[in-house]
Image 1 (cartoon, helix red, strand yellow):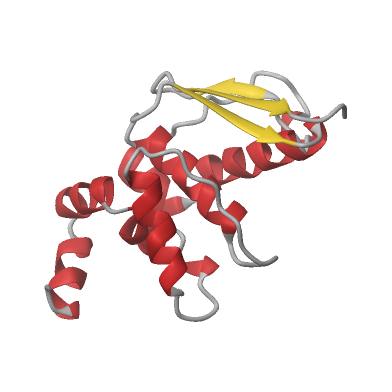
Image 2 (image 1 turned 90 degrees about the vertical axis):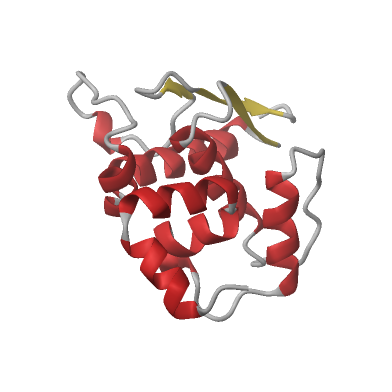
Length: 156
């Protein structure tokens, strides 16, 4: 296992950072979304990150505030950045919830300086006035041709 200093050195260079993060969702999460860590990660976060990268069918089942939704959003952003998926659906029980989560992903694509520095502008600029005042997004296609769509499992 590499020492912390070696990992920090590899993450300090864009080329090696992008290569490391492509295959390790936990490293991607820690580097690009460091602000989401209020304390050390739990062992189950490591398991979830590993499961997401394994391409298995998984279901997160855990207590509230365990970062399930946060990690799922980060996985979607990872999939967009590395274009490992061409079509991503985000399901919510209610359509408004699904759209709200997609909006959060859009905001990260537009404002996360580390993502923008390493991957460029992935979200297309809107031509419409007032677009930034929206609080939900139903679907979009990124500049690298990944389609993301919010769908409802319930009736809302």
